[in-house]
Image (spheres, rainbow, N blue to C red):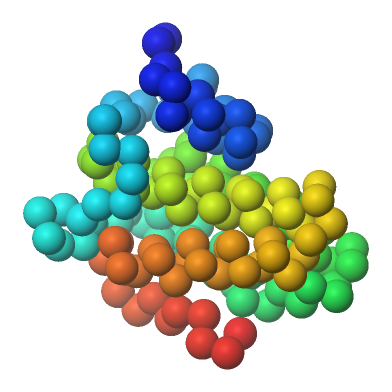
Length: 149
C-alpha cells in the first residue's frame, strides 16, 4: 500500500485507531481532497453505524468534565473505542469518508490531549469542535448537538 504524505502524517499524529483504519482495510478509497467538503453543496448521507457511533461519542464528550480525573480518562478511552467502531463498520463514499477522517482525527487528538498530554480542557474543546462540525457536513436526522452539555 502506497500512502501519500498527508495521510501518513495524519496516521502518525492521531495514533492507533486511525492507523488501524488505514492498514487493516477499512475498504474506502482516499481521494486527494483530504479536507472537509460537501457533496455537491449538500450534506453527506450517513449510515446506521456512523449515526450510532457519533451519538455515543457525543454522549461521552457532552458529559465530559475537565476536572473528572479518572472518569475523563475512561471517557477518552470510550471515544477511542467508538472511533474504532466507526472505522470498522461505517460504509461511506470516498469523499464523505475523507471528510469524516478530519473529524475522527480531531476526536482522537482530543482523547490524546486528555490522557497523554494531561490537558483535559483543551481535549474537550477539540472534541466538541469536531462534534459541532459533524452536522454541517453529514445528514443526521435528530442530531441533538451539544447544547449546554
